[in-house]
Length: 394
Figure (cartoon, rainbow, N blue to C red):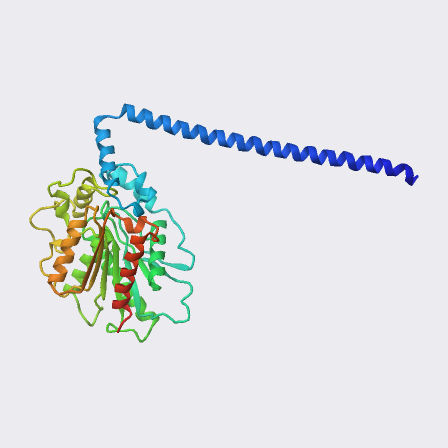
């Protein structure tokens, strides 16, 4: 009867409630155990790391202690707002062997997408176009673009790697203009003048691509700024020199500006007397001498009296007629003295030049830092104003 079934139903519901409660308690207990085990694992890892650091400190050789002191020397001078974890925890190593260069070349070549709001279009064998996905209400001028050459000491790096996708995306977002990351051969396999030849070819491709996109584009109204970071900035400077010397107005326009970020300009820096008490952060004398020796090839040496034309940007004697230049470098960068000297000579030759020296900044800080640090905000503002002035103003 219904009266007999009711107590059974209540008993069944009660038993289910107890089972659910029991299951919930089991789940809670399991989660608690997992959290406890996880915390113990992290604690164990932390203690292990501390023990390792203590062990390393006790067993360090004199050479290792010296290298650790070298790094601490520079870290104490870094601008506190630029003390990125990449710099703080970077081991003190040198790019002075094929094995080390190949390893980092592999890392720099790992693919990665551009930032949100930026699209990438690969041009096989030549480079990658990065451009804004949304150009806003104002249609961009198709005759205006920026050419970018990646860093890597002239011996490593890849135009299409994740690092370049990220940095070229930043350039696109800062300028709201298309940026072409050009492919060039590196010196571990192809020494000078391979990289420069490739850069020149990429520039000519850009001009032809702009003319193809816009039938009204001519050598008189196309505006391209050449930009580079570290080795790429050195190549950009040498490229500007060669384009000027070989210029035929009927063939290709000259670049309207050169945007040089901590440029690698002078082979003589690598063999100059070592005035610093320690190895520089990120890029030091050991890396520099290996890079320049590799780039110049077996027939030439860094610091020798004469080098082939355009092999080292700072070797040029006549700076007249070169494009307007914007140059930035950190005071802790090995390339700071040569960058300052290059800017001085450009100014003396009458070329519009802006030189921005960032106190407490190290090599490659422009690519390593996030960009929202106060010194970086000022730097990018200066960069934009200079680039827009020469690219967008009539």
